[in-house]
Amino acid sequence: MANILIIGASKGIGLEAVKRGLACGHIVRAFARSAERIAIGHRNLEKRKGDARSSTDVASALDGMDAVIQAIGVSVTPDMLLKRTTLFSASTRVLLDAMGKTGVKRLICVTGFGAADSRSRMGHLQRTAFRLFLGRIYDDKDVQESLIRNSDLDWVIARPVILRNGPRTGRYQVLVDPRQWRGGVISRANVADFLINQVEDDSCLRKTPVLTT
Ligand SMILES: NC(=O)c1ccc[n+]([C@@H]2O[C@H](COP(=O)([O-])OP(=O)(O)OC[C@H]3O[C@@H](n4cnc5c(N)ncnc54)[C@H](OP(=O)(O)O)[C@@H]3O)[C@@H](O)[C@H]2O)c1
Image 1 (cartoon, rainbow, N blue to C red):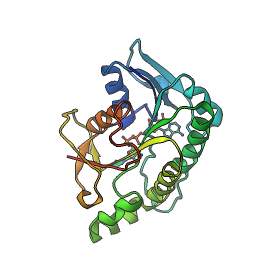
Image 2 (cartoon, protein in one colour; image 1 turned 30 degrees about the horizontal axis):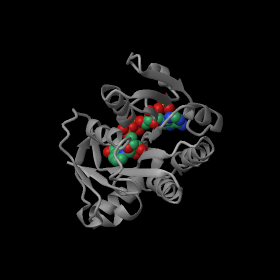
Image 3 (cartoon, rainbow, N blue to C red; image 1 turned 180 degrees about the horizontal axis):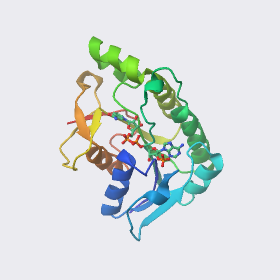
Image 4 (cartoon, protein in one colour; image 1 turned 135 degrees about the vertical axis):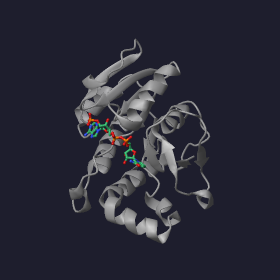
């Protein structure tokens, strides 16, 4: 049983990780700006309202934790084509600094297939569309990944392919070897399953697996 801080816990993968963490018997601190809206009640769940870019909020949320799952995201809107995003890098700088100070060592982060070196495994057409619609977001995810890779934490960077809602089946691929990286679709619940497994499993430490079905 571990104490897990989940950043970006109010919806999507983060919320699925909250559910999975609780089901596995962990103690979960669910962190988001709208954490109070999480519609789950559980004796092992603490809802913590906070902003991932705030050093004060993050430092206090780390107190007593054994591991962190970082699953923040931005809404993809038409102006994202032009607007620069800094959420991922800014919140990661804050988190790494706070983890360094508090001694929490394990960080499991979600970026996505297309981040950093995985982009080269996309086909030409897919890469062109990806750059057009998600380029600004992934420029910042590249910075986020580089910050984490250069840290001395025990980190895992999970790069899921296209997300969908759907149940946890446990049937998904964890592709560590770059030659195997490929696109596809995966449920948020299966991504959450992988993230929670990494809290106590060392096999993907300092690796950047692509997750697909
Ligand atoms: N959509 C896809 O196909 C796809 C594919 C691969 C990877 N991904 C990536 O997977 C990740 C999760 O995506 P998702 O769609 O499951 O989740 P999502 O719906 O984007 O949820 C984002 C979470 O981040 C939190 N958040 C955003 N800004 C925050 C801040 N400043 N402080 C604290 N929390 C903040 C949100 O909570 P509050 O708003 O309450 O703060 C929410 O809980 C994202 O990084 C996304 O880019 C997506």
